[in-house]
Length: 190
Image (cartoon, rainbow, N blue to C red; front, side, top):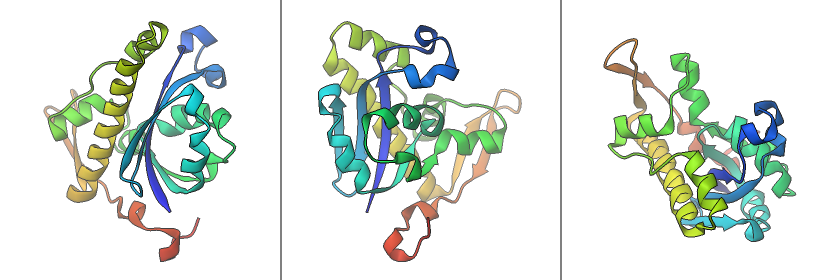
């Protein structure tokens, strides 16, 4: 079974669809995936979304950042696989539970890995609208790469430094994500 790091970009914004409660109206422009089993990155354009079924069918864990509230609900309309049944590790939610507020992927990567994002999600929408698909892929796959690196950093260090303007310079939080390495063949129950 596989572990997938996932990030999607959309063609439109929440403002375009009438707010976050209409997330189901957002349309994906690109899906970025890293497969641990294949040790490969995939930047799937809309005409390639059929390949998602193969990737998700072999997956037992989806790793991402805000995937439970953003990526997974949007992806559900592009795959026949019931991806809500695949276990997920949403690093955004994990940090929010410990800190009590939202912290961005770029902030966490800069603080812990000394690398950052190459842009903003709104840039990705502009890349799509302008037909700049290679820029869109580069942006999305960079987010997949830094998400993967942050996940691996926490697996190794078992902690994460979270900058906190209310408690400068920030705080270290312990995380134990060793469970995410177990496979169903090793007795993990779902």
